[in-house]
Image (cartoon, rainbow, N blue to C red; front, side, top):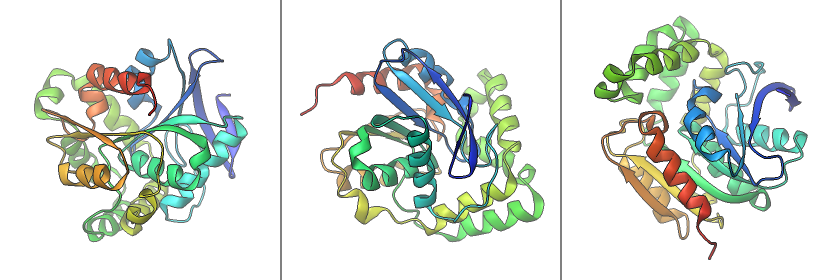
Length: 263
């Protein structure tokens, strides 16, 4: 560590917290890196073993050709956890990370203790924008969409107050391998997890941002209705990247959910 090989990918990983504590795995948004979870790891690592990692073609992980399917990314997570000898964990995922978390929880239920799904959905209402984005990124690179991505991810007030955090996020976004990004876009376009997530039995918290244009509130409500017993929390005055915009609150809510007794 911090480089761990699994599924022909060299994953950059960070473990933080006591070695014997329950494991919490954080899965990034598309075009994001381990840095997006900085505040959550800091808040939770006193009592939990926090694992963050960069996905295929993101951050400091290597880029390998992949099948454009969420299942492929969930299998990458299974391979990584196997390589790290993590047999069971709470899975926290945001955006595409939440899509991977849903798929992983459905396909590998014995490995999931609890599930936190943030700013995510089981199915996009329209695949076309994602296939178009994939083609655009392959043709022109990530620079052409970075500005729009940051506008969707952050409220204007946060961007004005914390330009350093937004610029860091934008810089790391631009370092993503363009083909890996495009393939992930195609995976999102093809995704429909609606049927398989109905079988998820792990205690689940759905967190949605009231001002999220990428995965609006109705998509979170669909998750809450489909996953038996799921709780939902709506975060006001936040956009897609609520774990950064409302970092302290998000950390507190995740921690409180992890501390709840199981039914």
